[in-house]
Every structure is written in C-alpha cells, then in structure tokens.
Length: 421
Image (cartoon, rainbow, N blue to C red):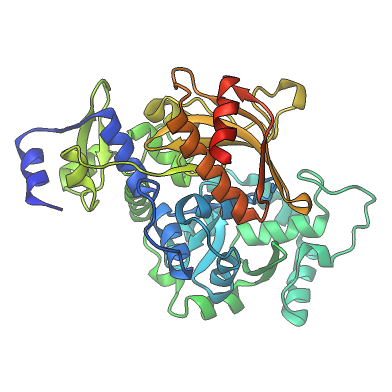
C-alpha cells in the first residue's frame, strides 16, 4: 500500500464516496475490471481464494451457481476445472457461508465447527448421530472396506420420494458424518458428492495436518473476521458475521473490529452519507486507488443469486441500493420477478435483474423477463452493455440464440434486440 494512503489515515479518518466504496468491494470480489486474457485453471483457484468461499447450489436452469459465480469473474473457462481442483486437493468442501468450495489451506479455520457441531447450532446432526449409532457405524465400516460412496449408491427402502427434506437415512448419515469432519468429499461425479473417510482424504490433500496445531477458537474467529473483511473490500460491522457465518448466535462480530483497529489489523473509514464506520483490511492493493477516487469499474455481467456480492440482502441494499430476494424457493404465485433471477452488474452499479433459462437442447438462452431498477434510464449504451453480457453468457452455455420475452420498461426490449443483432 502506498505511503499516500497511510498519510491520509494518520492525519484523519479515511472517507470514501459511495461510488469508491462500491468500487473497492467490486475490486476485492474480482468484479471491477474486464479480464485482459482468457482464464486458466489457476485463475479458478485464485478467484475462490479471493472470495474466500464459493457457495454450492444445484439449481441449473441457467448454470449451477458455483460455475456461474466463476463465469461472472473469469468469462469463458472450462467448468471441469472446478471438480479437478477438488479431486486434486486444492479445494475441499464444508459449511462456510453455506455449503461451499473452500481453499484447502483454510481447512483449519473450519475444524472447530467439525469438532463441535452443536456449538454451530447443528443440534440435529448430534441428535441423529446419537439416535442412529449402529447404522452410522455400519456406514463407516462399509466405506472403510468398500471405498468412497455416493448417496445414489444406496437403494431407497422407505417408499418416500427424494427432495430437499426427503433424504433417505443413508444420505442423512453421510451428511452428518461430513458435518462432523469424519467424512470428506473426495471428488464429485456428475456433480454428486463422493464421500470418503477423512482419515484417507486428509493425508493426501493436507499431509502435514494435525489437530494439535489447531489454534484456539478466539484466534480462529479473528482470522475469519479478517478474511471476511478482506474478501468484502470494506465492511460495516453488521456485514461481517454473515460472510462466513462466523460467531453464530452472537450480537456482533467477534472480536470487536474496533479492537483490531487499535491493533493495526484493520483500518476504520467512513462512507459519505453513512453514520456508521466501515472497516478495511490494510493489505488491499486497491485501497490507494479507492482513496484517490481512481478505481474505475468496466465490468458488465450477470450474477448468480448465490454470488457473494448479493447473497447478503442487507449489504446489497445498503451498498448498492439493490433490494434482492431469491425467489426460487417462493411459491410461484408469490414471486415478483421470477424463479431464477440474475442481478445485472453494469460498470459499478446493479442496474437490473432478469429471469433466465438456458434451453440447451434447443440452443436458446431465454430471458423471460428483464427489469431495470427504478431510476435507471433505458439507453442504447446500456442495452449494448447488457446485450454483450447476454451473448457472452449464452455462448458459454452453447445456447447461441438469445430470446427476450418481456422487459420493464417495455421500450428497452427493442433496444436490446437492436444491440443483439
């Protein structure tokens, strides 16, 4: 970081404009500037390291969320690289913000959760283990003698259908053992988890790990807090816990960010018009540019509903004035915008949202409805940027034809089609 920024901070509290605050978060998230070159597998890993966590969700009316989050940052890339990085041990899976792909070097930050799931509020997991001891031991023995398993390897015998809340007993036991750290995800097969004993996986992916080196809980929470602030670029105290779901059940982040300011581990800053401070990690390379108002956003892209930029509704509203609610779990008649609505990021602002579906067999990328945010002016320049993002996304899917059914405002549809030609 330049001496210029340290001089500003030493003389008075750093103050950023709202646009500079947005730009700093976008820079931290890899969403500020268009990539100059095609991504490779190392870029996939580096993007996940920068975010700290890549949330997993299986809905794929467009693309499964982890792939789409990476596409928003990297553009066209090989989706298989994500699974390869998991199988190679550069990544592991565990509960962070939700179920996530995580850099393997962060394994120790989540070990306390594995060792004490009840403290994380996962009392169901503890109860299931206590109530099904024999079945769980039989499952452990099966994996030990027969090798890694998928949930699909076990026949359903209770006559029930599958679904989120209809897991068969073996699936529940696999997930409970995974939560307790006894099983790890060795790889994915057709995006299905392949579970194996941690005692076999961990020595391969993290050969020097020993629970004796586990830092105490307070030190772990401190590291997760600093990691969250770094991933966010800047953060109000009220935003911090949500990122890695750290300090569950507490009223505020632990330790108090103000104590880390006193230690020099964080910087305190202000955003024009906000009454509460924000906190910034002092190692951010872009901080000097943000302080000087020199960060310029050039990216226009579509975001997954599970993208870190928007997964915290309160943060998206406070920082980007974007009120976003995921509606795929909402009954159809109660949805306002659609089933799988993608926020539209355009040059530093969240300017709209669209409900999309990729019809892969027909080669069509359908935009069922597109809504611009209140106050966003429909223009040819905006239409051109959005059209370019749509064409890049549709080409990545192998759905070369883009069809736009509805737009709000309606004239924007004509502008989009003119730009799509």
